[in-house]
Image (tube, rainbow, N blue to C red; front, side, top):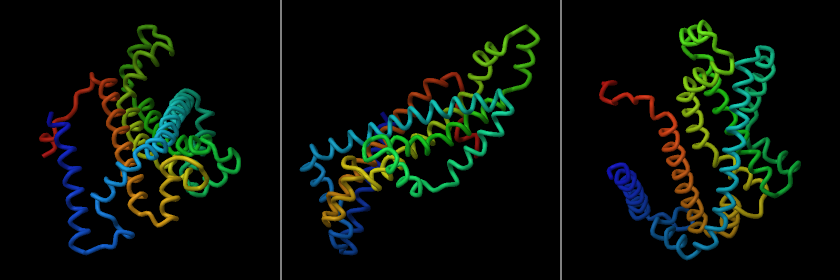
Length: 253
C-alpha cells in the first residue's frame, strides 16, 4: 500500500507547488499554465491525447524491444569473440558520440515520416546502456565458478546458460532500467523532427498555435506514461532477479 501511496503523495505535492508558483508570481497562462488548467484541457481532449499517446507508446515499446535484442546480441558477441570486440566497441562509442538531434533528420530522410524513424531513434538510445551493462556483467562473472564448471566438464553453452547469464542478469537489469528511462527521448525527438502523429507532434502543433495548456497536457500524459513504463519494467526485472538480495539502505549509513 505504501508503495502506491508514496508516489501519489509526491505527485500531489509537485502539482501543489506548481500551482502555488503560478499564483504567487502571477505567471501568464501562455507562459506557464497552472496544473488545474492543464488537467482540465487534458480531460477535454482525452480522446485526441489517447490517440497520440498510443502512437508514442508503440514507438517506445518497439524501440525497447529492438534496442534490448540488439544490445544483448552485441554484448554476447563481444564477450565471446575477441576480434568482434574491436569492431563493435567503436560502434558503441559512435552511437553515443553523435547527438541524437543530429541523427533525427537523417533517419526521417531515410525512413520517411512514419513510425520507422522514431523506433530507430529509440533503438539507438537504448542500445548503448543495454549493451554496456550486459557486457560488463558477462565479463565480470566470478572466475571461480567458470573454472569449477570447466573442471566438471561443462560445455561453453552450459557455462553460458547456467553461470554467465544468471550472473550478468543484475547488470543487465540496471541497463534495461536506464533504457526504459531514456526510451521516450528517442521517440519524442523523432516526432519533433518529422511526424504526423504522437505526443511530440501534438506538443509542437499546440505550441505553434500558442495553446500552451494543451501542450502541457500532452507533456503531462507523456510523463505519466513514461513513469508507468519504467515502474512496470522495474517490477518485471525484480521478478527476474528475485533471487538477488537487496541491500538494506540503513546499511549504507
